[in-house]
Length: 258
Image 1 (cartoon, helix red, strand yellow):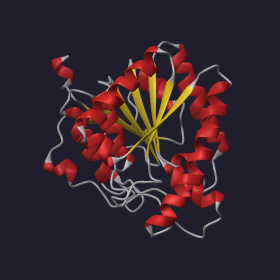
Image 2 (cartoon, rainbow, N blue to C red):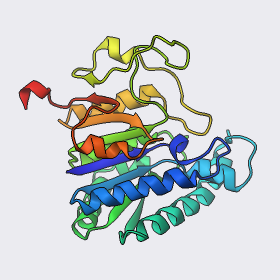
Image 3 (tube, helix red, strand yellow):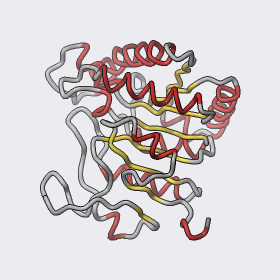
């Protein structure tokens, strides 16, 4: 399978903004093992700004663009150093690709990106993709859930997995409603399902359920399944690959049609 895995800041970092070393190490171990099994893995990683916040000892997530860009510049170095070190332990080579809004909108840039991705996968590399937050001036408008969806569509992936700080889509906010139930399968993104989306996520990240449902809508329209799962448990990726019920699965094609 060709799998795009998007990991959020809340998964990669502690609430302090500093790297969650144990979790990142486990994520890289599992992804390396899946790659060893023959799957093509593409990692869309948030975390540059969050890492930069911790590295620069900023008291909170910055609100002005220059400080966000500065934090991203510092954090991206930390992020890629970590990925390179962790994946190298399993003899996998990582490649960094930073994208902006223009790269997605411009036809030639998008084609260049697709050609680069295809060649990297042919060469056996593991691409790590993030928005180029250090130069983006559009208020960092592409969240990485949407970025994950755009990447999955561009490379014609079989599956998009969004690892987040929540198990999946619930019937209500599980942090506020103890009766909230996890929805395991979404065959169609109905208005009722979309209405379940809440606001923003953690203080370090920017992605909430609304951006995840938008990503599901994008990839499902292209026949690609998407799963939301808890990033605190990277080993769940094994169950996902084995077809076991994990998190919430949004179907690009109805299971009855397969």
